[in-house]
Length: 350
Image (cartoon, rainbow, N blue to C red; front, top):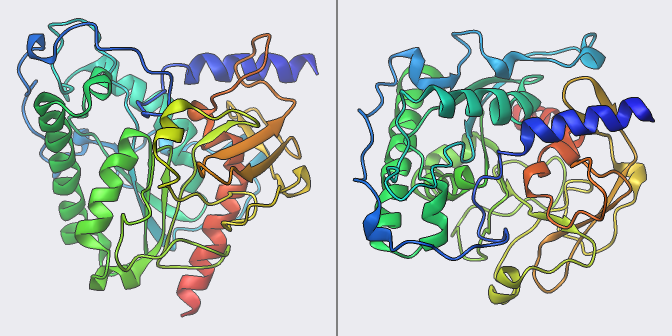
């Protein structure tokens, strides 16, 4: 038990800065008018023919290749690709910090590599080649002034980098292979746009295994032809969830008036029934251990956020945790890993 607590504390420390800005997090008011921010662009744009602009790629050694010791005997393959859009790892809070990240910023890149790529993107390496571009992500502060022209321009710039990376991937690497789109938080903001532009009712939807759009609101009308996943082996669909403690309803979620889609990652359905800990395959703990049968989950009926009930406190602190945004992937790491395999099997069977 003591070892488990230590592992959780270590994992929490590594993950504490990954809280990529989700508007359902506790929001602080913008302390400065958006106009005081530095210029939009901060450094040159990416050249995706250069591997330094990829946080993860099958053509380089990177943290997405990490495999936990308890899976060392796992049978792995690469029957599909995953294009992962990482969450915010740029947390500039000074009024003169640029709106968007500089791709030469080693602190930002190390945050990306050692946090989201290592602890989130690696969930897909049992069945996929992993592609994850670096992009000029929006400053986390931009979420606090989300509807301002400056914030919109920052997120547009970020998305255009993601789009450029995806087009490069399609032209040079996909070769008609099945593809998964996966994302978290700010990455999911961009993933929704990418799915709308390239997959929703488009020929490429036929090659979509699934889109894991996690940690961000997915509006009911986000897609015209792309369906929500209603079963574990469904393909050509999307799933997503935002995780909070049982009984917690953030004000921002209430303000959405139920305009959100959620899939329970324990059942892979939109059912409102509680899924028991029997279905929980394990929390990822810093690549040292897996903790199964410790989380039950239910979709809250009015807001469509995901409620979880667990006796594990991943922050390693006293008191009840209410917002599990940073742990959207890690709480269900083994469930996701298994589900990826199942959906790829179903896709290739077609």
